[in-house]
Length: 430
Image (cartoon, rainbow, N blue to C red; front, side, top):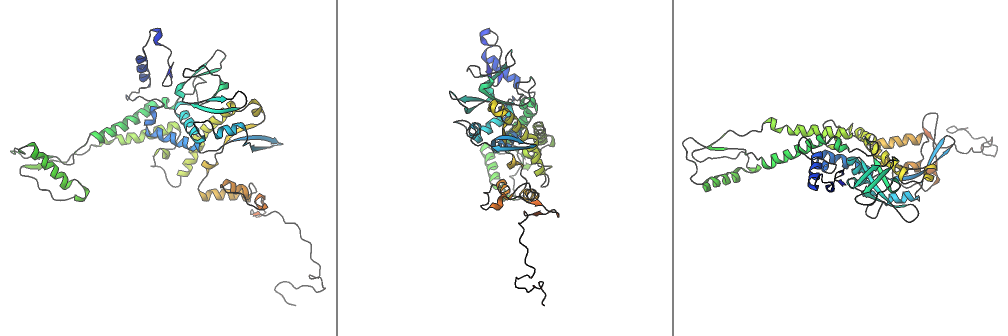
């Protein structure tokens, strides 16, 4: 039995625990010292976790996925796209209920929070996989049989084998069930949620007046509650807006203004606590601080480098998990033996600013690495209509790119014009 993504090994039929007791036990398992219950689902209440999931899932969902044929000729390896491969068509439209973008958004979110992602492989009677039906990890039970093979159970359905499931996971302590990063740092996440709730309660229910009025010694105060409320209402109308700042105030006879109430510094330290927790959680997931809203150390000169580091250290890790699992679960043995691979195209998120990108492409163009049409393709433009777009430049002696050597022209006749009169050099007269 599985509830909220956790395996229950004792049942009511055995007379051990009731269903309510099981739920209470589960809640206690996910409860932290701060009293906040944290699970892969409730962790999204933490703004930092929300920012991390959105950043990584948003980046991966925009990447094109290609099925490529890798061939080797001598010492050179060449990769040719296979747009008509059945897996390429499957990844372009995974299922009837999910398009390509939403599939990767959900899959990445689950992989980050649960440490694993599952999808049922739906086939026809014969032929390739027709659909990938994503399943929330909380509904899937994973077991290892005596032969060390994995068995999957979705809800109350019959068990499925690896041949029927697509399984992506991160690091696993037991070697086969991915660990949830959220559960590993749940105390830090709980502290951020607790600070968020404290701030909401402090400002929502802990209103503090700017001024406190008191009756002078010997004064009996207002004669009735209605008179007291009338004074408060008139004061709010006269001094309750920014446009009436520093306006004159005349207090009734027998009333004084007490010292204003100040907010103590120790009661405002939860702002520093929230900032610290934001950095702690971001560090646990390997995400640069500026992507979760901490711009204290962000500058115009290093934000781009931090973004590139985010792609290389965080996004690339999840991309490689997906690629390896897809090649294992979606490709046939013949495909794998024939050099068919699956790769995300990460050029879009690895691009720098326009000037840096063009400078880099120009260096490749001058060195003969790319031609004009490959440059245009990198920028999302159509190729040139003439044949010049396919020409590669060779690096000349001066280090500047030169056009291919033109065909040699025939030498002119010795007399220069063919009539026996030798032509004078330019700029000189006979």
